[in-house]
Image 1 (cartoon, rainbow, N blue to C red):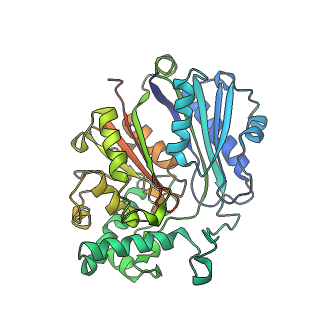
Image 2: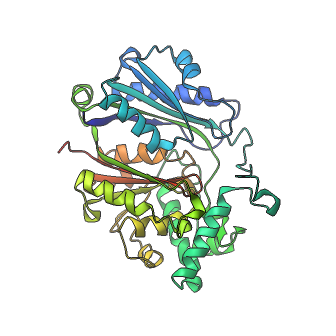
Image 3: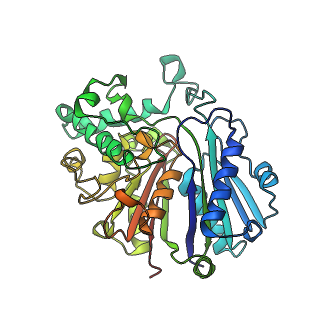
Length: 376
């Protein structure tokens, strides 16, 4: 397998972009990534886009290729690809020798377009008001609290939202940068118990473009590539037919495969990035990947441990609770620049290895990757 590296990652400002389409935001991110790496457009020989989640057909790869003037060797568009799935697709193209330099692009104007993530996930839950993925997250967190006898500790989850906001305040492209105190968190309204508004992702406009290259080529293009050291995945498509599906036990299979593929253990990780569509996924991720013992995550995230300067910084960009909701793309933008030492006042000291973890759909999709600033 040809080793793969990231050579550029550019993101637009997050928030509201009135009057701009997703296409325009995507083109802005694409041009920004080319500028950042000093790469000519015609050097791109692969294109991967992620289709909009609203089913509108936005960001189809053929249309986007027309807009930026590309005739790549390969192209494709993933529906609910999220960053890790799109990057894995790009890496597979490079590993197969079908492309050497792939542009991966995600863009959305879901905030200015009024998209609310309010479609029923299936025909069975809708009559009971089950209209949003947050419902599944809330059920999962309820299960977690009851299984480990932590119901009285429910509010400890707030440490994650507060850490995310502190990180976002250091991030110039983040949407939510205003201060948030503990009292603000406790007074926030419930969306679906036991999740408050601050525990659930934002809805933002924005775009990200990541350029992925064969490692040898990457080293001729930029001075400091970020290397993909390994990826792993495990799906659980039978959903609630699986034992304790709400606690995402199949994450453990992803974790085992990732460790085997990379040789890195939890103590080797300098920065952790969790695709946080909701804060409830954080305890399950920390425990299933082995960063702490089962039932201990609510204690693990206290006292600044997951903040910049702490033992395990998590989502140093502010994540999807405070920076913007780009289904993991912004996490990759951040880890790329962290591993290159380019994050200024939010730079993590001695950041050499970063891990990204994603949970998708209704907890049936799990994937993870480890990246480093060294090839070996």
